[in-house]
Amino acid sequence: VKKVVVLMEHTAGGKPKLLKACTLPLTGKAVVDVVITELAVFGIDRAQGRMTLVELAPGVTEAEIRDKTEADYETKLAVTA
Image (cartoon, rainbow, N blue to C red; front, side):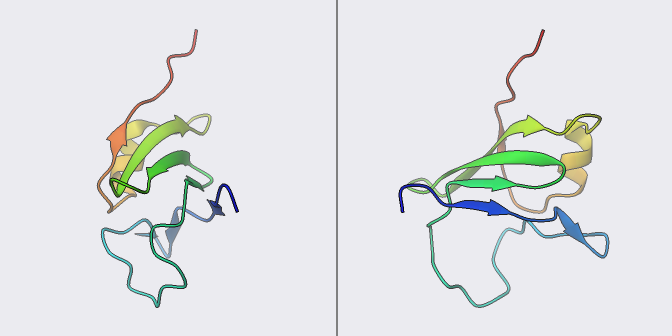
C-alpha cells in the first residue's frame, strides 16, 4: 500500500481520540499517512513521528482542535481567499 488513510471520530464521550500514546493494542506502528476526522485533517510524517494539522472542517476553529486533541501537532493550514 502506498498511502494509509485513517477516517475516525475526533472524540469519544467528549474525550480526545488523538492521543500522545496509543492505549490499545497496535496492528501496525508508523504506518499512517493521513488522519481525517469530522473536524480536521492531519498529515503524518512517519519518519519523524510528527502530526501536522493541514485543514479544518467548515466552522471549526484551531482553538477547538487544540481543546479536543491530546496529541502534539504542528499547524500548517493553507490560507484561503
